Image 1 (cartoon, helix red, strand yellow):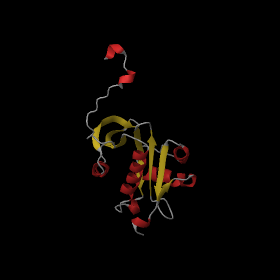
Image 2 (cartoon, rainbow, N blue to C red):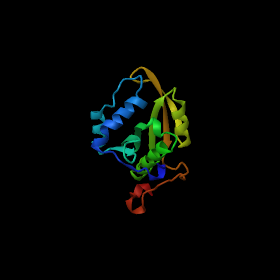
Image 3 (cartoon, rainbow, N blue to C red):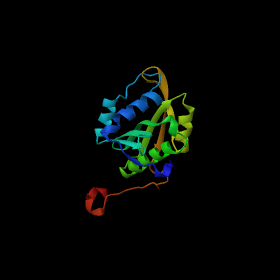
Image 4 (cartoon, helix red, strand yellow):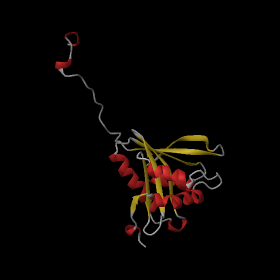
Amino acid sequence: MSTSATEIRLARTEDANAIARMSRDTIETGLGWSWRPQRVLVSIRDPNTLSSVIGDQRVQGFCITQFGDEIAHLSLLAVDNKCRRRGLGRRLVNWMLVSARTAGIATVHVEMRTTNLAARAFYRTLGFEDAGVVAGYYRGVESALRMVLSLRSRDFPEVTWEPPLAWRRPADS
């Protein structure tokens, strides 16, 4: 099946088990299973969390991102091992980034195991930059590399602002 025919959609409650299993098997290996179906359901139902899936007949990949006022945190991204190298992960992240820009998000943060060089390379191709290492981030067992993507242009000119004359007091003139 071609990736162009594979749809991205908002996750539904019936996707929670598949998402949780995929998280357990592809992300949380060796750390214990914390993204169980109930936790995934909470994210799916949370209006401040974007939970999306890709797949026609079954969940082939998913992305869970919490949106704050200006910062989004990409908590989980996974693609089924049998579906990798087809651009599904990139499509999921790009879909999330369009949503984040629309919501006015300034930066997106993501963490990965410091040993996960493939994830680091993947996020770099999307424009993320290294932002530091967080010791013991994964349940005290492993450290994480934090990466950040700025969604706002760094090329804005410096702006100075002065209140209109009508707002000024006589001593300000």
